[in-house]
Image 1 (cartoon, rainbow, N blue to C red):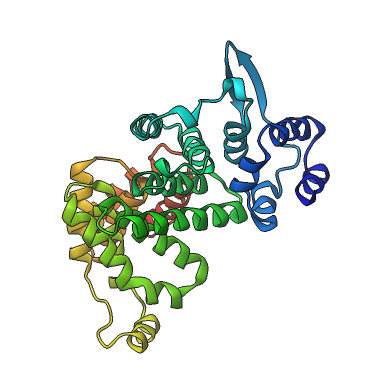
Image 2: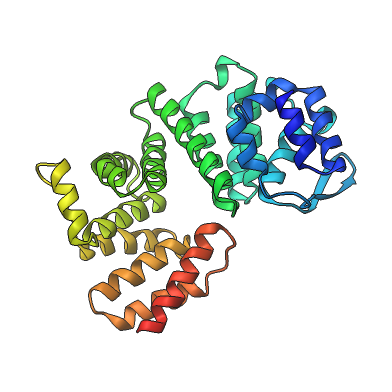
Length: 322
């Protein structure tokens, strides 16, 4: 009843009708995804009046305009006749479908399929391969919304998925990759002290991942970003690190560039943040020519995630200083 009351106060009548239909059909699934008052308030806060415009074509709903969080909600609670029968899908089919959707950029649908599978409670889906993909999906959804509360809730959801995957399969390189990424991202919400506490753990997860897959551009970027952040620590944060560790973490801009340029070689122009870090590392080294090249590439990067916007804004500011 608390959930229904919240929806009635915060959403339009059209969207209430849509959600109510989803609740009638599968309330357990709804509550599994939005388990607490805090989570569903975070997901729907400040979204009043932003209602998806939908059209039906054959057996598929087409999203003409939609906030990313609404897109996730829609794909989770669409009517049963339009919904894939997750219960009948094999693990191999689920993973293949999800990877295809991810590669094609349909992150919300990929994530909803994983959540639907986990919500069945089937032991078939309780495995590392499902959990690390769910972590990847939740992170993608977090990166698609500009609502800070929703972004935080989804980031922690992703972190829990990564932990579950790693607990089931401690040698899984993808679980190590996402555990490292999400330890760093959750640390950003918790402050400098927590990020420093996590620093060695983050690096160790990335190193485990890159040992198994040395040409994974995402892991190479993450290691490069880790090296840059450590090399770029101001003196007072270095003193704080010294209080936690007998040997505080250390690195250099050259080491950062080694990983970042390798990531760019493996998968050119794959991530705006990677281009930004390369530009910043060159700038710190006094190489203004290469810094300007990569910062301009960051500004020109086509992408609409939160990371992309933040990278473009920072690169534009740095270019003004060169």
